[in-house]
Amino acid sequence: MSTTGTSPPPSLGRLFWVFFVMGATSIGGGVVGYLRSGLVVRQRWLDDASFVELLAISQTLPGLNATNMSILVGDRLRGTPGAILAALGMCLPGAALMTAAAFAYGVGGDDPVSRAFLRAIAAGAVGLILMVMVQLGAKVLAGFADYVFAGITAALVAGFGVPVPYALIGVGAVAIWWHRPRGT
Image (tube, rainbow, N blue to C red; front, side):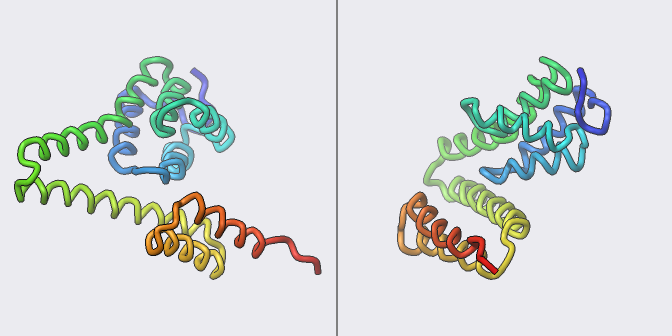
């Protein structure tokens, strides 16, 4: 297999472990930046051009982008065995967590211990989403106006119940107008 990164292809065990850790520590839509950080910056298995190429392919396929990326990267680095182990590594943590949550709910859905377990999972998910939001926001939000637009969008959705697409379109239109090129 040829790699496009700056380091040699990893062993199958290392490939599984890296995707297992990513699967256990990533959540939701922020995963693309997290994958890039892990695969391009830390592991140096891919360069930016290869990452974008594989990301474009993964986004056109049905299913989760993170799972699709793990399969494509695993295949690129170590062939079919790499694709299988990378996908297992990416999916196993979430599957184990969902199985535990289902078990806890099934055993005693209204039991105080089960409710506490499920609340802990929910709190952890909110914490991870908040962490990703802060990390990505720090990179994307360039000035005070950007923070205002993000705050208005959050207020419209959370405070006033405006559907997300409407809030994004409305605030996005104002933000585009605000950031338009201005003649000198």
